[in-house]
Image (cartoon, rainbow, N blue to C red; front, side):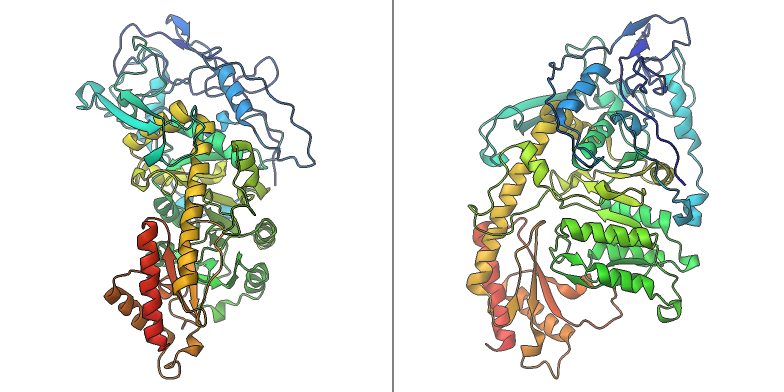
Length: 599
């Protein structure tokens, strides 16, 4: 059953002015962004003007911001309701809303950062929850911190350390300027860098330029959903890329997709009711290793060069028999990596994604859309003139494949994004997008587990992405990565052409990610009648190590380890090795294969 959707937008902010500055009296404690109605009938946003509940002196800190006026271009009407949001619209929305005020331990509803919506609400997915997820209660201490928004309140409740005792006064960074300098070159050779500094009290009214986020806030305890400052950015970015077609979608920050996956599996799956999950027949090894200790077996779906085969997925679900599947009930969760799938490098095309979504809707599956490589989409050929790279951010967004989230009319997709593959993996920071009901359950677990991402990571990425680059600069950076990984992939493919014996090794041109899947025809191996696939694989792997090259064995990624493999595969990556080392590594691999096959 669906509910009617409400509308959402933004306005200015008025907050009480504190008489002193300290942890208990920070001005502008979050006003919980009450859902008042503005003159145009739209809901006010996270920046919105609250009613003043006390006699405290107030001052307007919102209103029109320093952002320049944005003249929005005419957007032609399209037959789809899922019309793309533009950067210009986001900037205008921010200008009208004013400066964001979100101090220490501020609560945040990501929904208020979205634009207007006349979309339907998500379907009820509560029947998918595990018992563990269904009984979680809100963390009392986290809920109590929300009272800090009350004007004039003196807190003796929470154990929030005083920022005066934080031994870090500032953090300085030097970053390439992709917003103002049009050169789309990698950081090592970029001609324009800028130095940026994050101070402890940058949000204080006495700061030379009053900011929205500083170390006194970011390095203290926070809500499990992450800082409002960074949630705003990822919510807007999700609108730019996916703009989900239902109203009550939300985002929250995560400690990276691996941690988010573990929480999500525990939220959806229960070994006591014989749950299992479906995934590609070769899947991300760490995901498989995450599910196994939870007592959640994984069943593989056959794949081709576009990943999951929809007809095979439908057949498995339509003919599921618990008696033939170790008494496991029909799966209700699909875990998939649609773009640059790890390990195969397969990328689902637009029609393939729609078919998979429709089958999951037919059989009532929740889809975990894990997309760490989504922005590393690569041209289908190694000839640049045949597939020119996007020249601007609009073309770049247009070139991206549609996400499963963008097709999700039911609210059954849980999308996981990560900064690990596109910024720095050490940030351990990403975000999750799903329906309000699923995000709320996810956060109840986070409150008593990791309590949200590191404050260092959040404030640094906010300074880089939101305050320095903005959406335009971040998209330009992603364009740089796309070009760089295209060159890396092409280098590896050329080495494969030169050094691998094509009579026994085959491969395709990967369309996304950082992995190349190599298929070795084991039936042509001289010992194929006396040795198993795993034995031949081990022989080649050990020979590679002896020759000085590390390559991943395909068997490591089998979704069903108890089932004997039917093919021989290896996974190579073009992520980090220099072009010269990459070429040499493939030459050594070719030598190992030739020795084993006695070519």
